[in-house]
Every structure is written in structure tokens, then in C-alpha cells.
Length: 214
Image (cartoon, rainbow, N blue to C red; front, top):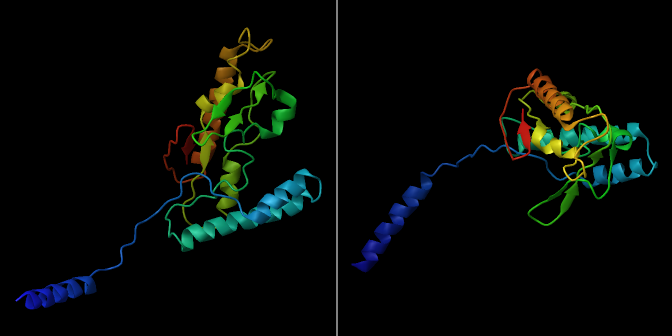
């Protein structure tokens, strides 16, 4: 009797398995992805004056194209991202080109400690006015050259960048540039960053505490 029941169960299981269809779960990348080794080496070489800006740019374009192609062909993502392959920093990309003129790294800088223990220090603003040198739509425009699918782009929030006006300063002010004016300038620049992306892209909302995606 037990042999008959076992055979019956086996036939049922085999029949059930034969009817199972592959399940595709749409996936979508959130945030950055590791950069390829050749891009990392090229960045180091460029910063050491071993290669030109043009050579680095070509390697960056190939990394963006590869990222988009793999997301589209392998994960079948409907909405793509460049994985922040070329941003100097997800946090300071708008002000990176101004760091040596308007900012300083010292003990008064605001520090962020991540869950894995590593620490990032924000540069400290030393004079006004606060402004962006680079807007996120620049990265979006480049990525959209390599795909016809919607592309999203992360922008940094005002709350994260507000810490460049160091809260640890003894009098909490920068000469001739009060914090209230800084916050107005910061919000205006953040709004501009968002609007420029919205003018170029299908809008996707993401909020990993310090970024918004478009």
C-alpha cells in the first residue's frame, strides 16, 4: 500500500514540476555600483598626471555604456542608471570643482560614520556664496546617449549638503556670510538641480536618507 502511495505522490510531483513556468522578477538598481578596475586605475593615473583628461573621459564613457548594457541585457531593468560611474562623490559632486577655492578640510569638518565603520568627512565652506559647479543632469545627459530606456539620476539632498557650513564652528558663522543666507542659497541650488533633471528625465522617486532619484 505504501509503495502505491509513494508512486502516486511521485507522479503528482512530476506533473506539478512540468507545469512550473520560469518566473521573471523585474529588478532595478538603486544607487551606485563598483567601478571596473580599468576605470579605477585610469582615475588614479589621471590624478597623478600620467594620462590626459581626454583618455580618462573615453574610459569613463565605456564604463557607463557597459553598465547600462548589462542592466538592460542581464537584469532586464526597465529603468536604468549609470551606477554613478563618473561622479567624483555621490555626496559632493556639485561642489567638487570648487573644493580648493571655497572649502577646507580640518577638525571643524562634519564627519559621517557609516554602518560598516568607514568615515567620510565633508569639506568645510570657508567663504560665500554657496553655489554648485556641477548639476546632476550633466551625468543624465551622457547616460541617455547609450540607451532608449528611461534613465534615472540621483541628486544629493539639501539636508546632506547643509553640513558643509560646519555646525562645530565656535560662533557658527562665516564672515560676511550668515548661515541663513547659506541655507537660502543651498535650497535654491538644490531646487535647480532637481528641476534640471526633471526637465530631462522620466521621474523616479527614491529616498535613501541622503539622495533623491530622478
